[in-house]
Length: 85
Image (cartoon, rainbow, N blue to C red; front, side, top):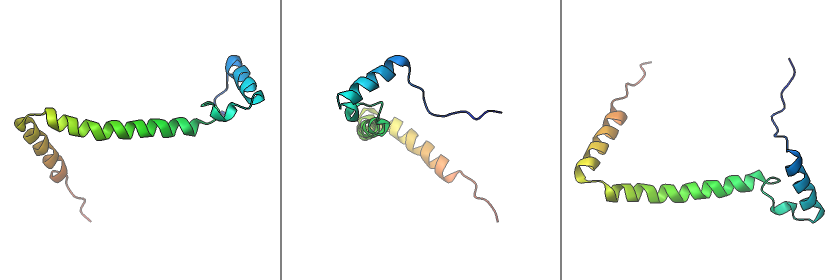
């Protein structure tokens, strides 16, 4: 069975764009040539949203809803059966 290559192939338009950017020395700013930069940006955006989301959720929930969520979390946490050795 032939081995599969896991690298993404650029289509002709993307390849032409990359060549132009490299020839004009702008390839270092291109997201295609640096996918880790995109990952870092997206991770930062996720962290910001996560920090805001929990606080906003608690502000919009009623006391009864918060009690229900806390009760459900406690059951999940303490309801697990431990493995016997």
